[in-house]
Length: 301
Image 1 (cartoon, rainbow, N blue to C red):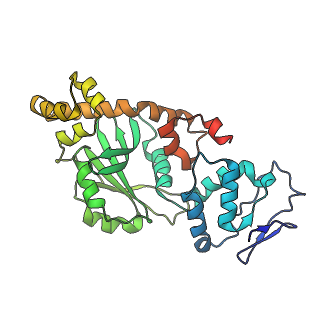
Image 2 (cartoon, rainbow, N blue to C red; image 1 turned 90 degrees about the vertical axis):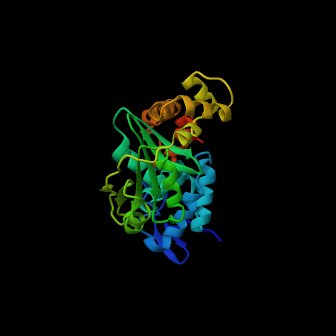
Image 3 (cartoon, helix red, strand yellow; image 1 turned 30 degrees about the horizontal axis):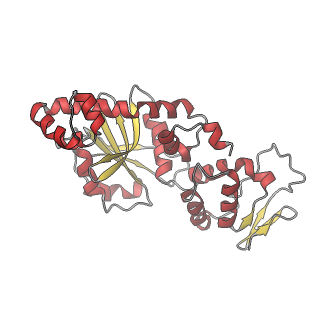
């Protein structure tokens, strides 16, 4: 059963939460977070994971408030929490739960934000889907392995990525570094971060070397039929076009076309994210990148 706030004291799962009485609180003041200093980290993490993992930008604030209250087994007053619930869920991820969405947003802001390039999320490559990639004069792929991920597929993923990207990095939590180093070839660079640090920093433990396994066929298969036709001024289906291009174009020509078309495909998404980043919450980076939806319209629901 949910417990209702009463005289500024709320009981949840036997833990006391001390809250200022809402009658005495100026509603424009910052409210002390329920999810910060009151819960022991180890006990609250499973609840935070449930809230963050079930979050969607399309959910209304009312739905998010109700869901969060159910997970924490508390009744959160709408007059205090409705307008701030998205911020609170975002803060849960930023402070406590460094999942893939966290790494994507923080790595982009710390390492990939500046320069004349285009960043992209979740690019299909063979049987895999790389977490992030960056295209400028070079193509660089980034695969993320948080402390919550296993490494079972890493070897096969890296084989796919080295077939299309000139440089490949794994971004992993520091505790996984030694295992990652044993799995991936020396061509693959590695960034690490310490999940126990209050401020996350990314350290390049090993630089990436240019891939010697680039496959023109794999690169062409990453492009759509329309992209192949426009890029190479050809007609016909993808299945018939690729063998013809492999016979008539050099690997360097195909590599240049691959980078040019990916950059063109994702440019508007990347520019949208950059131009609206001051409004978009970290937890929603990829969603707004993909949809280019009106930020104010989504967040006002």
